Structures are given as structure tokens and as C-alpha cells.
Image 1 (cartoon, rainbow, N blue to C red):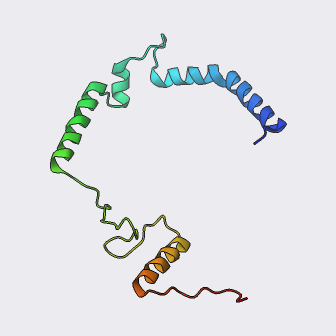
Image 2: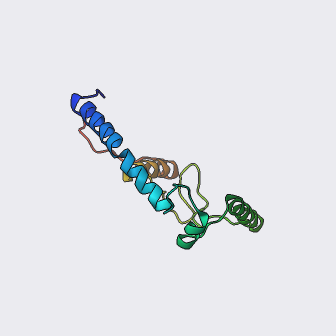
Length: 126
């Protein structure tokens, strides 16, 4: 798609707005992180606002959780056995992503194999 003059202008003006607002935004971020005059983050102040956890601790915890899940052999509840050829599940339902036209096509194909003769198609007979 071609780049219109309007979109170029809008992009240019957004970039200038970002440049103009950058110092204010930076100051606001620094203030949010720390009320210290130096601008450095003080963990003691942050601990009052939120709980501070080291990344190593989180990583170890997730590794332990994943190991437990693998040991239990958990599967998703949505995993049902599905016939790869007809795409029907064990309850005789098609997948949710399939539209009605595709369902009808597969159903007709199945019925022709079962009965031997297909459904008569509507249309003009020449």
C-alpha cells in the first residue's frame, strides 16, 4: 500500500510530539520509581509500594513448577481425540474454527463414500 502524504505528516507530527514530551515523561518515570533527588532507585522505598523479588528466585520457582507438571503428566482438558481424515472428534463434532461450508463439504464427502451415490446438486440442467 502506498504511503499517503497525510500518513507521512501524521507520523512526523507524532515523532515531534514524542520529542517534546520526552523530558516530562522521563521526569515522571523517575519520580514514580524514586522520590530521591539523585534519581537513583532505592529498593527500600520500592519495597513499601510493592514486593521486590529477585529474578533468580522467580526462575527457580518456575522451573520447579514445570518439573512438577511434567512429573504429573498433565494434559489440557480440551485435547480430545480427533479423526485426522474427517476432523470429527469423539462426540461427532467438528472443530470450532471450521465454517459451515467446509463442514457441509466434508459431510457430503463422507456420505458419498458411505452410500455409494452422492447428493444431487442444484443448478440449471442443460
